[in-house]
Length: 154
Image 1 (cartoon, one colour):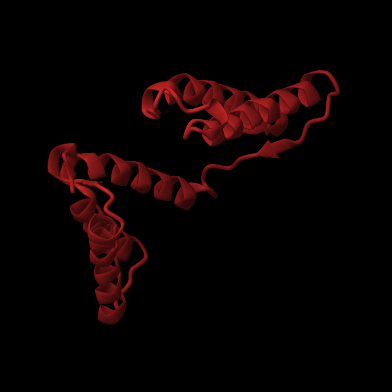
Image 2: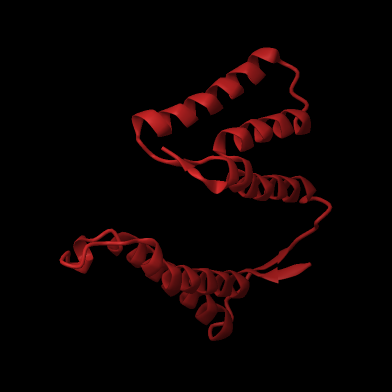
């Protein structure tokens, strides 16, 4: 499969940037009396605007100036990368279904099987790190993480 990197990459960044720009006002709530540039919306808005602008530049380079790189993808070579993407997509969904800690422990189990890790010390370290991250976010940073059924735990 041959891909025009500038054209497809530019369109991808424009679409994702516009979608995020449309959803951002509902996701970030600020007090009404704070100026926009001092609010929590300023940095994401600037970053997303730059993303859309960069996408437009790539599309213009491809269409107007005919600057294009053709990338040939062979999915049989990329199967491990696609498998990892699938695993992480399932992990992201599992976070909201069974909670952060359970999903992370399941991810560790799947990765151990996928990479054929036999060392009990490595497995123990991974489990301890997952549990530590969970408790650090909850207790030290006071950041809620999803529990079972997407309910956030404080």
